[in-house]
Length: 227
Image 1 (tube, rainbow, N blue to C red):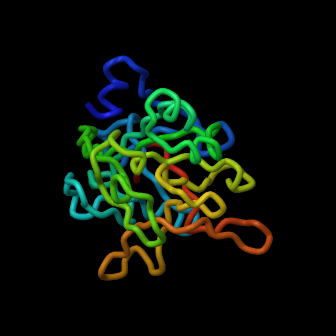
Image 2: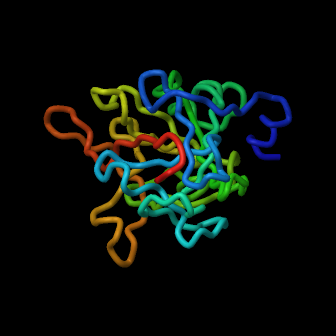
Image 3: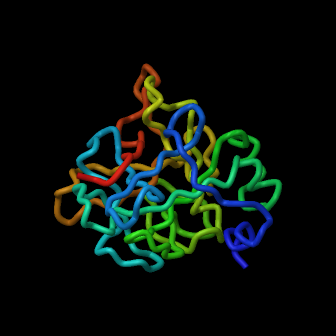
């Protein structure tokens, strides 16, 4: 049984949460499609703003399916994700052993989340992830993989490197073993309308000399149905 299934069965509870990608480490609810409703989220970068959102390429719910950014639309189910909050990184380590002791030691107080692809509000069982079961390396693509089985589907909100207005924050992959520059959700070089579509990946956290994180590694969410 996967960790997610165990949690759903009563070991702990995944809960939808409200708020923002800010100091509290909680996340807002939003939706690309009206049928997804306010139980879903639509992720976007600081770099491109609320024009382009995380999208499952070709709308296919399957292991290995890649993720891209795509123009916002309230009729595109590929933009629909459900966010699950299951407590802190430490809770995953203590209760489930899902993350490494080193990850827990470094990020134990951060909130951890899974982003499940939920077209039209229907959970698919697949979450945003890196290659399952291995520590991500720079450039590893972000894709769909079964939720709750590996730390690769977990993303910790890096509140220490959020923007000054608390709107955007990096998302650290739960399987990283690089703790000086952790692997975070990253939009690669290019633009969302380029062909072939640039695929989301993970890269070490990148900052300018003043400590500001690159805007293609800062993430937030849209609240409400996309227009």
